[in-house]
Image 1: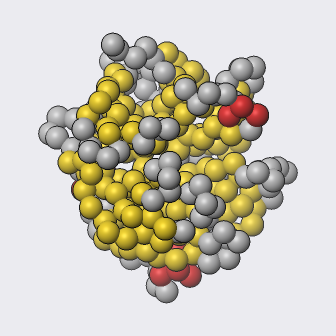
Image 2: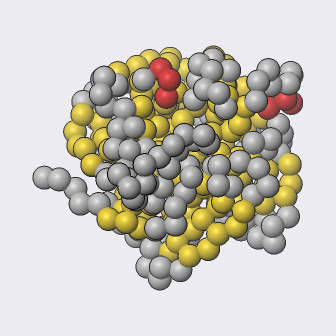
Image 3: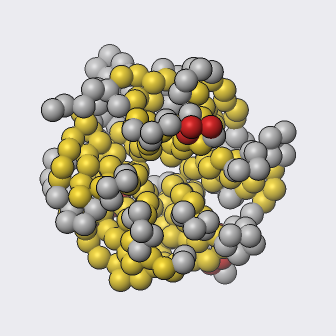
Length: 283
């Protein structure tokens, strides 16, 4: 059975990423356009939309329970309150003890169910080992580098029992899994080895059955894998090439929001061939 997909929001994103679903009945769907420098949202029920711009590329956005957002601006992260005021959080330089060798930015992040912010970096030129993976303490005061040698730090999520953390470094062409215990990760291993022709694994989310849904850049699809065995279970085809991430939304968390991109700066895109590139989709 093929899963039907339709356009959820037709505002074109240069690089749509990092969707979240929060608020009453998980109906407030929000995402970032990394290089368009927008945070955009749409309500699943009312259809009401909003957006605001950021002063630099923004690799992730996470709504806060107290209002406003945590933003992965290139030199952030920062807290943004509802009035648009920004507060700097600890930076990569503070965590690493040195200045970035090349031009890096934040790429993807997620708050664990037990309250830590996990976030990763990548180099603008996609060097395979310049990025790193970090954890921000629950009080927002300490950013710790967990490991380096990262190409493009991307999707992550947790098993329902909070004993496993799934993780993607796109350039490894793998979905990996860690043992997880109260913010600590260990025993890194491969769960899925991505096959040739699938595209590049990008953002992801987990479901209530501990299956993981992975977006594929240059793969025109979101694919579902068993979170225990890595077996391919399902494929959602999209009418665009560059599929970037996904999250579940709605009262029953049974609707999948899928972000896509036109491409990175300087990449050409034939919008005649892919007229919906950069749109947000729903399955």
